Length: 116
Image (cartoon, rainbow, N blue to C red):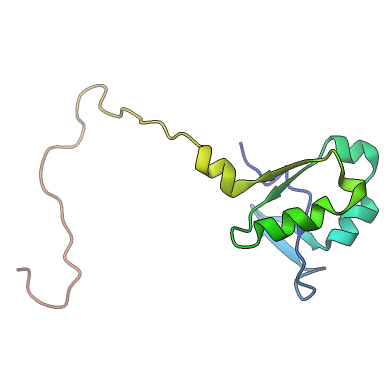
């Protein structure tokens, strides 16, 4: 599933980035301030919207900032870094069936010198 159609906006505290757009899959996503989010957020949108914090270094500061805004109480908020820590990778088995590529050593030499 592509996230490009699921992202309504990017919230950034950097004033220089606000009112710009970020392009994902040819979709322009607005970069807005926290204040813009809060002022434009209705109760219906709040129930159907989640915030995903992607900043690894300032996640705690962002959480505290959002937690101080009463209008955001009860809204779903996720720290992507914590989600990734709990993500359980699964191994895939690509060896079913007959080998299609012969077992030879394939290489490409890109150095400027002779092949050693």
